[in-house]
Image (tube, rainbow, N blue to C red):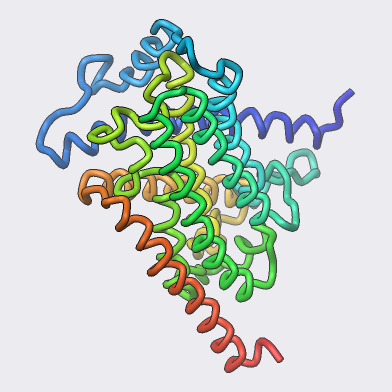
Length: 344
């Protein structure tokens, strides 16, 4: 018989997985509505009231499409590519603390699937594996446009991971921990890391756009040059996996940004008005999701505002601007900590 703690963890895993899918599904609807608002049109408005059933209609369409595997492709890798992309997109949510926790029948249950003391390294490890899903899919398609898109994606994601990792080093220096839960707890009372690490936050945010292949960093799937990029040959739900993985990555990236730099589930002054710990935890979780939805909207806002870079501009920004800035940020963080007497 399962212990209550293990049963709660299994339920939490299922809930987080379902929330990730639902948020990704309705992010496609939200993106169309945001685009329509910015372009002075209506957007989806046929499937259900205000078009809210449009994501379900898209899902049915994906399932009903013909399943095509190119004759000259590597069939096993062709199937493996979108599977890896989807799997790694969902795995990163395991170390994100979604709330303080709930006390049920005198026992405390954490709203975090697992609290490993190297949570940040786990996130970066999972994110770095995600590039294989895109690379394998592009190479296995045996299509020159897909291969070019996969090469663009791999070089872009590897380049920007370096600057992203260095921006996090400054944050780790300041907080003294790699645990995502501890970093969140240190930001209680409105002491958000974005106030102390503004340059690091800016670098991390830009790199998050590149990691999720969002505009202006959507060169891997640039339809004007590469038809559809790395997923040109994909159809049905294998294409759906790639598209879903992008939106889940956007959801997880927003959650990571909110956690590391904006206090996660910490809501300033909430303890003054609410005394029940469970209610405080639930309100904090809702506040956390409010931050996540804001950053998802920000991703969409940028997409429909800024045109994409040329590829040489994209690589120059990563190597010649963000990388030196992230090193400078580490240097400045060390000097400030030394002047404040936090290091010997």
